[in-house]
Length: 102
Image (cartoon, rainbow, N blue to C red; front, side):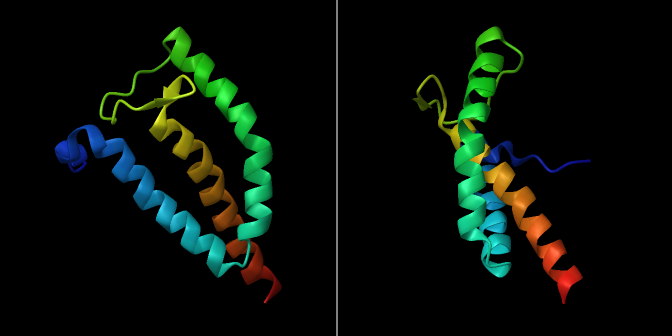
């Protein structure tokens, strides 16, 4: 059974993003990959924004445990999600790659 993290109420999604974002940041720093990851995220962000805006607009999913703060038509947490997910993937990739070259 999964733990109920809904105790954070409207901040649940934000807390989750901050936790995973901290892990992503640590991985990128550890791999010395912050700058290249930032470049990749900047390129991916507009694509992710349009995709996210569209799926929310047509009702593909609904985000319940969020702050209710919208920025440019989508929840604040989604903007952070579009940064954290690629950062986490790149952080894991760079750390795995660094181990192969050692």
